[in-house]
Image 1 (cartoon, rainbow over the protein chains, first blue to last red):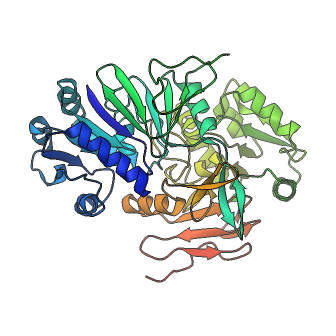
Image 2 (tube, rainbow over the protein chains, first blue to last red; image 1 turned 30 degrees about the vertical axis):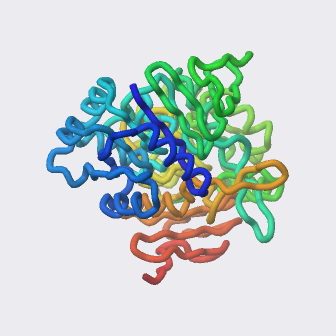
Image 3 (cartoon, rainbow over the protein chains, first blue to last red; image 1 turned 90 degrees about the horizontal axis):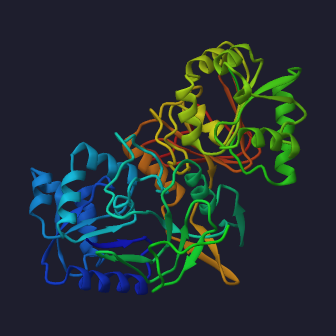
Length: 240
Length: 240
């Protein structure tokens, strides 16, 4: 399998350059990539913005939403790129359009799959480690299962803060580590907390971490921090 | 209907004093309150912590999880308090134990209902404006519908920041306003973004905002900020 899974937050020039450089290496000679914009509401505008903002890395993006038969478009694509947005909306669309099996089949047969943020969540066994608001009720949380772990995109450690006057005030909602701990109260699958600007490149059984660090959470063990270039999978063992 | 709906973040002495003071006025002469701990995993520990941390405001809390027949316990309770935690886990339990109708019926008949964070989400028409991670797939997102609006608990405006060395670094995930806008791309119900430390007190058709401000989002209008004591419902009209 050939996967390129981005966390999100590719909003600085350095991060954008890293992402587009990785895309060029990943898609290589492929000239046209099937783009899946279902995580946002306005598909046409999303497709246009991808090119306008340079997020296409020079590749021609073909919008699946313009295809009369989206499943056939997946069947005929040379590569696929699932964009970010709201994961509930994305997974709902993939179920409603019956696209999960055909994507899984094509990726297993070698078609390169790229995802960012919600598109990375979609590559996991389920969408249960998304950060998004449940704005629509999907038929299931089951996702593509292209990797044997869950990814928590836009991962950060510690508390968050919001601006208050000239300073910052702590926000008391659950931290991301709290949320992942709660996930492991109800589920077994290891979770990779992928910091913004980070990318996981998968080539068959090789899992490479690029651009930013990650924290790997295995149920029953202490989480382990991994830096770019470090071993991501099988998961490093924490003590407990 | 008698409702006391807290946002969350009652972690400072001032906020805690405000909350417990409101509870004393709200529950009044009632000596025992049925506590619903399903949003957390360890129900016994949750119940003990409520009293240990003073969050019981002196009232005797009876844990619904220790009742052989939870629906009957709701039927016989003089007041109910639904605690915070993970909203998916809470709503899943309310559906599985078939408690939604009996709670709705008792509250309509005058039983005081208090909720904090996930317990406030549960009072809304659906759980679709929660901030929580979808760690379990509930049979539906439908909730109690005790109020005609959605509440987004732990609301904040603007970007979030995380610590980076001695300073702060912006986090690029969707802001809360982005998420509520996405909710309104798929849903019609107005949303009250309730800041941490804030409480909504409902007495029949009177909706009072206490302790912190809120931002009211009506689909198709600009959001409107409301301060403590201000009019929350019917929603103030923004321009657009």
